[in-house]
Amino acid sequence: MGSLATHFTASLFLVPLGIRRLLCSSSLYLQNPSQYRSKLWYFSNPRWKNLDFYALVIALPIASFADVFLFLTFSGLPIYRFAFLQRSLVFLFFWVLIVLIVFRENFDHLLIHESLVFVFSAILFVAEYSVIGKGINGLGEILYEWLGGLTLVCAACCLYLSIRPTAFFAEFLLSSGIVFKGTWSLQAGLSLYSDVFSLKGCHKFLTDVVCDLEEDTLRGVTLINLLFVGHAIGVLTACLVLFGILSSNWNLRYADGTGSLLSELDLLHEIEVE
Image (cartoon, rainbow, N blue to C red; front, top):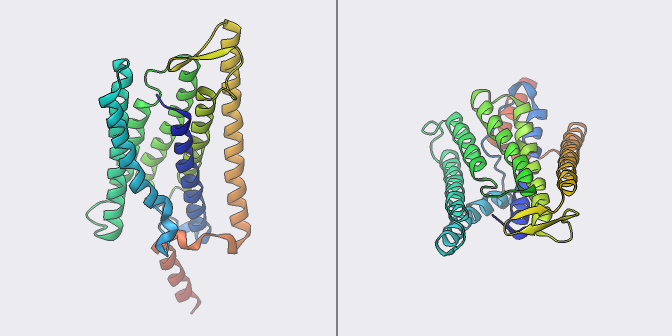
C-alpha cells in the first residue's frame, strides 16, 4: 500500500542518491581505472556536501515509526496491516546499514569488513523485494513486479561487489538501478494514485487498479511495459551521457566525492612524477 506522496518521496531520495553515487564512482574510476575500488559510501568534504546521507539518517527511522503507527491504527485487511509492519522493519534495517557505514568510516575499518556490509546490503534489498507491492493486485501488481525486479538487480550488484569490489560495471549498474528505482517509483505512484495519469478504461478499487474490459487490461499491461522500456532507455542514456561528460571534462569530476582513496592515488601520482 502507499500513496502518491510516499512514491514521490521515495523518488526524491533515490534519484539524487543514485546520480551522486554514479558521479563519485565514475570520477574515481576515471582517475585511475587500474586502482579503482568501489566504496560503501562516497563521503565528501566539507561535511555539508553529504546532505543525502544525513537525510537518510533522519528519514529512515521516521519512515519506520510511521509504518509502525499505521500498523497499530489500520483497521483494514490483515494482509495490508502486516505489510506496514514488514516495511517498517525493512526501513529500520536500512537505517542499521547506515549506522554500520558510519561506524566503519569513523572508527575501525578492520572490525567491520567492507565485503560483509555489501552482503548485508544485498540481503536488505532482497528483504525489500519481499514486501514490495504486497497485497496489490490488478495492474498495480505489474508496476510493482518491475520495481521488485530493479530491487533484485541492486541486490545482485551488491553481492557481486562484495566479491569483486574492483568491478566498475557492477557499481555502474547499482547506481543506475537506484536511479531507475526512483523514476519508476514515481511512475507507479502517478499511475496508481493520480487521476491525471490513470490508465484509460481502468479505475482504482480499494488498493488495486482494475479494468472493466479485457481489452483495457491488455492495453494497460502493454502501456506499463512500454513505460518501463522508456524509463530504462532514458535512465541508461542519462547515465552514459554523464559518464561521457566526466571522461572528457576533468574539471567536472567530483573529486571530493571519491574519498580518501583518491587522495592516496594523487599521492602516488606525485611520487611517480618526482
